[in-house]
Structure formats: C-alpha cells, structure tokens
Length: 123
Image (tube, rainbow, N blue to C red; front, side):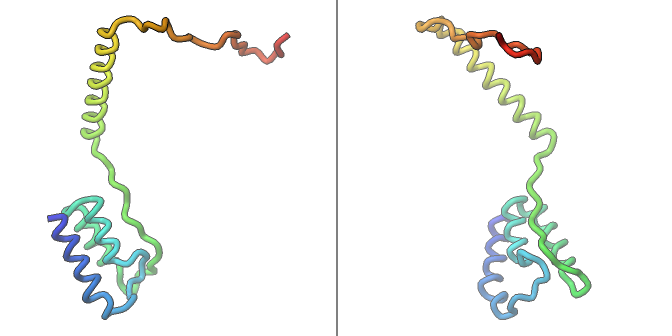
C-alpha cells in the first residue's frame, strides 16, 4: 500500500503538477511532503499527515517551511530493542568466558600515575 501511494504521488508530480505550476504555500510542496511522509511513516500515518497538510494549504494559511516530523518509535519498540541488545551482550560475554584466558595477559587497568582530584598542583 505504501509503494502504491508513493507511485500515485509520483504520477501526480510528473503529470498534473507541471500544469498547475508552483501554487503551494509551503516548502516543500504538498506533493513532496506527501511522498516523504508516506515514505517515512507508512501508508496510514503518512497518508493522514498528507491529508492534514493539504487541508492546511489554503489561502488563509501563512505557509512557510514545514518538514515531515521524524518517526518516533513506541515504548514497546524501545523495550524490545533494549531486551534484544542485552541478550546479544550476554551471549558475547558467555563466548568470551568460554574462550579462556587471554594469552597476552591481563589488560591494563588505568593510568600509570594516580589521578588527584584536589586543586593543588602536582609536586
């Protein structure tokens, strides 16, 4: 459905839009906004954003710059991504432990000289 809408918008841009000329009060034009909205948000939400934009593009609107809002991921998506990342990190740690000790020895743990947090200069 998404690609069908994007194709219909492209057909409009190639056929009808050149005959009308630049009449949109916003930048980017309503057809470019619609194409980008459907591409970023999908057919349902992108279509809704496009319809809302076309309704706002009227003689009483001041116009201006109006870009497509960025896609927001729902809370469940973030939680699922965090859960999957924690699982893959746990798998990597199990693999590292099963590989045995490092033949080159332990890694250095910090700087050779201690760090002083006081404001007095080093002597």
